[in-house]
Image (cartoon, rainbow, N blue to C red):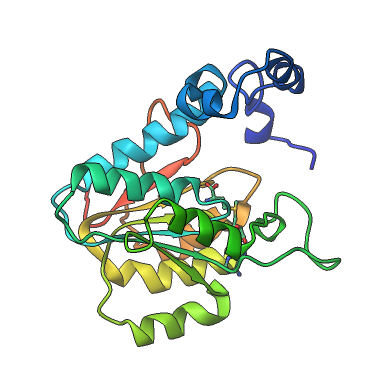
Length: 238
Ligand SMILES: C[S@@+](CC[C@H](N)C(=O)[O-])C[C@H]1O[C@@H](n2cnc3c(N)ncnc32)[C@H](O)[C@@H]1O
């Protein structure tokens, strides 16, 4: 994809590690444990900013009642991060993380990157990763097509209420459906987070947000953040 606007700025020294650096890390014989335990040595400043943003937003919702949802889970980095934050900050609380994804392998008809359908994680692998760490009662992975099955999921589980909803499957249809289903279930004071608001890689996300969020929603961004690019605190007025 050739970028005209935000995509051109999204490069340079803050960008993810280069292939050259990755090859060098291999050559230097770091162990797998080094990559887990000393991850700031290797991961990019932008990736660190991503997780700091989620932490900042999570902290704003402490004391607000509701679960945490991620739509578009992929490998689960963000869902796991929220589940681990909830364990640290709400050890006796009943806050759950609900991850929604169809875990569908791309085929010949799948649109190319940056389409959200391009990303693929096998459901069995992420489930095993949840279970082997003992998170099966903290992080619930729902394998469903958000476009066609989310509505029924909420008919069956109508009481569910959220304090954070993170949207990371940025086509118009998906974001439109998610705002319609999740906004009424988001507690006042809770936060809807947009990964690629006003970013040309996912123009449909901005258009759906413009159409389906309340007109007076205050769309904020984190000053030191990268992606997610925007968030809305339900009930906030300027
Ligand atoms: C950009 S990835 C999510 C990345 C993830 N949030 C992260 O931070 O690592 C988009 C995800 O949306 C999922 N997806 C795309 N279309 C979907 C649909 N109709 N229903 C459910 N999930 C869908 C894909 O399987 C993919 O895992």
